[in-house]
Image (cartoon, rainbow, N blue to C red; front, side, top):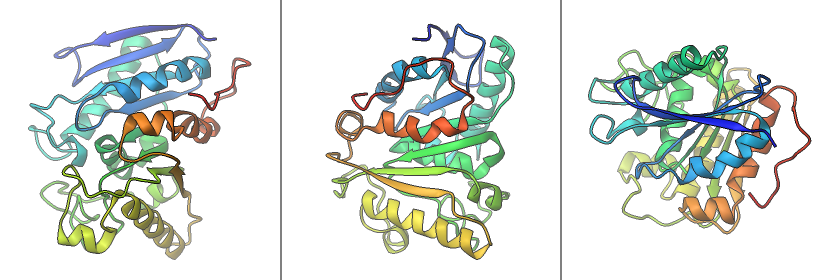
Length: 273
């Protein structure tokens, strides 16, 4: 198994606080960025730690504090539109300088509110992302050029220039995951007439609607759809269920492996992760 060193960098040294775990081997296959949800729980990042070690990838975990980044899911911060996305860009650059990592696109994983951030970040900066796993997002930015961000792609107060690199995003390998039982309209689920009408009533419906919309737009633009959906068995809207029963970690890594360099070990990810 790969050995790691873990470093915690606090503000104001970095744009946001973050934790990074680095393989001791110089043969680092890639960078995996795990985004927390609205609760800021470390559970998802902790679940990926052992797997990142086995895979020989850098594990980067930014922390968006609630005082400055209460709306990080739509990329906003108190500094303005896209502030949370810009903070992740700054963190990636800081990690590169501080730990002598060559710049490369990141593998990006998020659950719930973290999945909202992750897919919107990838739409905004597809050139910075190697692949995306968006798990159990509450709602999505639809590929609609006539609706303002964060509901669609058009310019708005939350994205003054709009989403500009749609074709690059459509080429990006994307895996959407959602629990087979994630069909409750709980208090944390965003509800509005626009979202309900265009995306559906539940996270399960909305995940399927977004995947179909991305596929349709890609095909209309002459691009092969690079998005797919995977249903997590035995899982509702719970990161613990998604990890333990749904196999979120090993399913994610199985998808992301093709975006990383050659393996430097003999271990494989086990379904028990």
